[in-house]
Structure formats: structure tokens, C-alpha cells
Image (cartoon, rainbow, N blue to C red; front, side):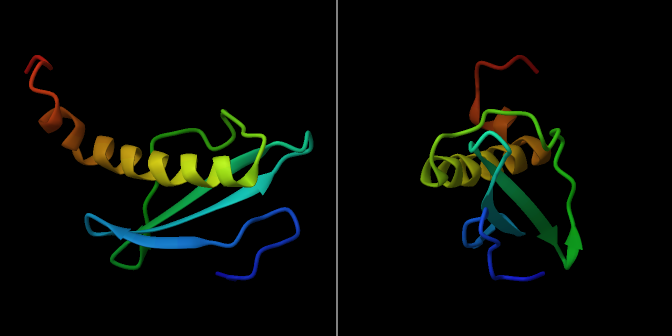
Length: 93
């Protein structure tokens, strides 16, 4: 994986989260909007997140898209592992 961004990408931000290695960067679409790109690995293997890649929202700035990507990565991993159910005591079991 190349760590140097293309002209239409931001630098890659990497962090560990609950046993996953997460990489988030942004990419510009043909309408000059930005979208977050989320890549996840666990134990050296790619992890597929249950979400279509090219579905919005798209953001006007790279910074907004990057922040949204960081938040979205944590949310999707929490949902994948069932952690969202644990945080919501009102959710029926």
C-alpha cells in the first residue's frame, strides 16, 4: 500500500481500534466533492465493512470528509462487532 497521496487524495491517517488497524483518507470525485475512504485490517487480513463504498454523503472540504471517515470507521466496526447493541440499553433483546 502506497502511503503517498495522489493529487486528489489526502494523506492516510492510520490508527488502531479494538483490535483492528484502520486507514482513512479522502478522495475527490468528478464533481469536486470529497468522500472518505476506509480500509480495515485485522491480523494482516482485509476486513470488509458492510457498507457500499460509493454511497454518500460527500463533503465540500477534505477536512470534513476526513473527520467523517474517522467517525464512520469506528461506527461501522462497533456495529460489526455488536458493540452498538451493548451501548443502547433501550434496544429490545
